[in-house]
Image 1 (tube, rainbow, N blue to C red):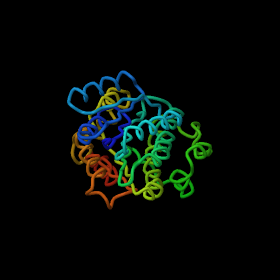
Image 2 (image 1 turned 90 degrees about the horizontal axis):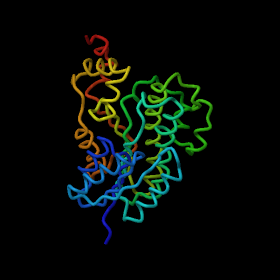
Image 3 (image 1 turned 45 degrees about the horizontal axis):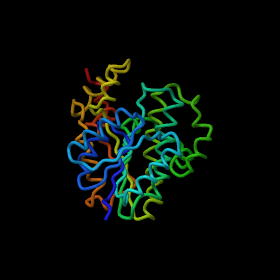
Image 4 (image 1 turned 90 degrees about the vertical axis):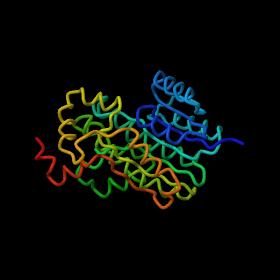
Amino acid sequence: MKKDVIVIIGAGGIGIAIARRQGFGKTVLLADFNENVLDAAAAEMTDLGYAVQAQTVDISERVSIRALATRAMELGPVNQVVLAAGLSPNMAGPEKILAVDLYGTAMVLEEFESAIAPGGAGVVISSMAGHMPSPLPEDQCSILAHMPADEMMEMPFLKPDQFTDGGAAYAYSKRANQLRVQGASIPWGKKGARINSISPGIIMTALARHELNSQTGPMYRQLIEGSVSNRVGSPEEVAAAAAYLLGPEANFVTGTDLLIDGGVISAMFTGKYLQAE
């Protein structure tokens, strides 16, 4: 009898923390764009006693995502899917960020809709940045939530030249992720499965260190110092939240976003952040 399968897309700090928490007793299908990162993470988990399969994936390419979903179904019932891959604002310009963070997320939800087993659950790792933009027009919200991914990317408002920089494209993409999860909860629900998103704040991962050491580092530090918790988060804290959303205690939870940011957004919208020294 084949074991249940958990698919982890993104072998960074958050993805691996979730894989470790959720993966024992299951087949872990670990996927990442960076083959070196993927191989190292798979080897480490294997050494710790996990049953790990690895596959490279490019989430900006549908054929690559479809191959991953097919592999997952071959391994066994796909019980859990976690999308923790993406680009940060300083890693690319608007075109690439939209292709990976927005289009890629939409395609993963479409392709794994047919792969997820009844009773299964998925989690998309979004970002607190998705809570920062002004409310979007209703027509855009509907398109981002429901329009097929390939048609969606033809919309004029999603052309790269509509965004001033990578940061603007990133925040918009993360808001789109939250809307897409809401929309996907309907077809996933027809499969007897659930899908939710998590919006982490600044979590101490390699990607966060990259941002803190970049030209936008001072802004990140101001966010931390002006937040309610006055600290960064850990990948394990995000993994604990994912465990809830993926587990039986959350059977009545689908199509929603869980903000885990140490109070950054609360501080911003109440004015406390502006008072931080």
